Image 1 (cartoon, rainbow, N blue to C red):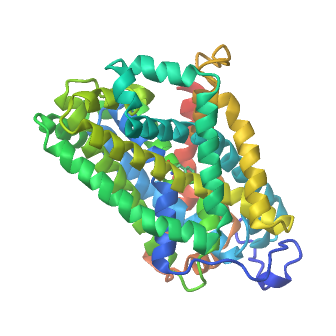
Image 2 (cartoon, protein in one colour; image 1 turned 180 degrees about the horizontal axis):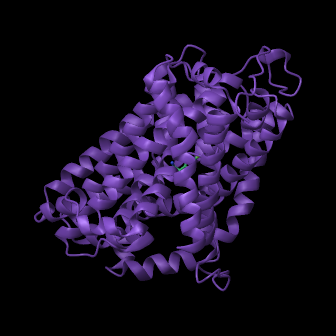
Length: 463
Ligand code: PFF
């Protein structure tokens, strides 16, 4: 595979690619970086990070997670960016058009499928956040849940209608942003929203820190219990979380990279996005864990942490109603910016391959992912009987998508950039000077990433 020549014909003349000549681009560097932080920072940083860190020892997990982001995350993110930017095409055409090996198009399709599957259940969980925000704002949750938040949550997710309705609201709001286009929709939306989300999470963290007993939460998050490092499960949880949170392996980074103009410096962008995303998760942790400890609750609550444990805290803490509103707005909007990136992947494919309009592509794909997500939305009520190894529909799909499909996508990116491209082509596509930094990047992609990802699979099969 190594050393295959890059296909260098101009984008417009490539017969396989069928891209419109005028490809949309980001309006500014800040727009590109903020939109990509929007893709990365989502449910993964708030809902998933807090419960996975809670279940896996807090600081020990955080340490390995940050190492995974640096060693695997940043190199793979840069890899995805540079495939898209070099091809200036949708996810499927990109793989085929920048090598002569058209079989690589299959990798593109696989990752597009991953983005659709991910969005199908992502919209369901985002819908829960919307529902909680609406519930707090209108006072319904405070009035009716009466401290019994587990019952409230279970009754809501078991309802045959409501979770589907909120899932639909998420899908429609995602479509609205995507239909408005790369600059006028995705970029403008993220440019306004990301600084706002950053400010919200900082205010929430400040509030968390002001609570009595906050120091216990900080100790949990920042002082590693070295004994926890002996447990292999912590490493795998950190690796899976790193993929999910950065959005690696679902073609979203590739698609956003394809809107980056030729002169854009991709390596600093990848580092900024990874740093911003990690900071977002850590600050969200600072908002959540001091509160969990201050109110004497167990941090290892699992996926219900955000929807059951935190509302319990909000109900007894001073200013809890305001805190609850801010938290669920943050969760819902952060999820929306990620959902937008996931929908954009398949829309870009339809627009360029079938020459569909943006509107038609977004509406059709919105309907497809909505229909695909209905079983996940009903998996706690009408379809609760459907279980796979004791897990419900949504959890099973999440395990497969984030634990298997995204790492496979990451593996394909590593193999493609590391081996299907020659060294010169890869570093040229990344815009890196040919020196030790480029060598380190390629070493991580060629050897370290495939080995670590192979380890995940061995763990899944035999662990
Ligand atoms: N990174 C998002 C989160 O942390 O919630 C999830 C995600 C977005 C995964 C986009 C994959 C992706 F392509």
